[in-house]
Amino acid sequence: MVRKFFNYILSSDKVFVRELAKILGFVPTNLHIYKRAFTHKSQASQNPKSKYYPTNNERLEFLGDAILDSVTAEYLFRKYPAQDEGFLTQMRSKMVNRKSLNNIATQMGLDIFLRQLGSSRISQTMLGNTFEAFVGAIYLDVGYKRTKKFIINRMLRQYMDIHLLETVNTNYKSQLLEYSQKHNKTITYDVIDHYRTKNNRERFKIAVLINGDPVATAEDFSKKSAEQKASEIALIEIGIIDSSSD
Image 1: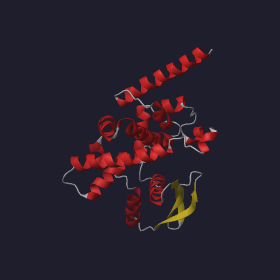
Image 2: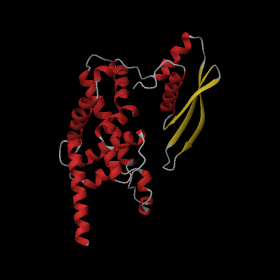
Image 3: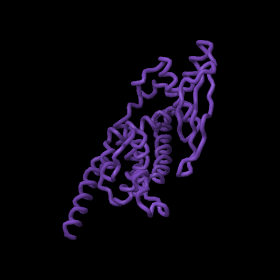
Image 4: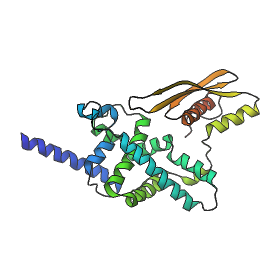
């Protein structure tokens, strides 16, 4: 019975490693780090030890987010030697925003690993956060140089059309302001809720009002990001952008 149990564990890890290697382009060594990257807090909270030792992917998400910003910034700096800081900042935002990371994680099939580690309800936001944690795990496994190579070759070049992104305007707040100026309307933003999550992260809920009338609401971990999300929803509501557009 014991032998069968360990054989099951070993065969399970073999499948995990094989599928992971297809995405990484190399065989991972520190499996526990990758398993943590695919462990959402909703699953980790079921472990009583998680109160004292974080077993979810939030710390890896923090690390991966910083590495993505760094690698993407350098990539753009070298790719566009004649462009100014404003252009580079906007391009980086388009490449590593939540919607882009959600899409990349979906195309990579990271939901498979989340399900293997026990997640049953998988949202798009969860996928994007998992991708950041995944990048953090790669860094801890093989270091910055190989992580940078993974991001450039297996993320930016494989799943992104950089030249198409150049033409996409994702500054929804700016678009809404242009609309208001063109149609002589007043746009205001109200913070309708501001609280801290169980993990002590700030959370903002923002409402967009046109001529004093509420049109859309959205929330996120920063006021600026929540305003952008609410502006996007408002633009969809008034028919300026298509809800199916990326």
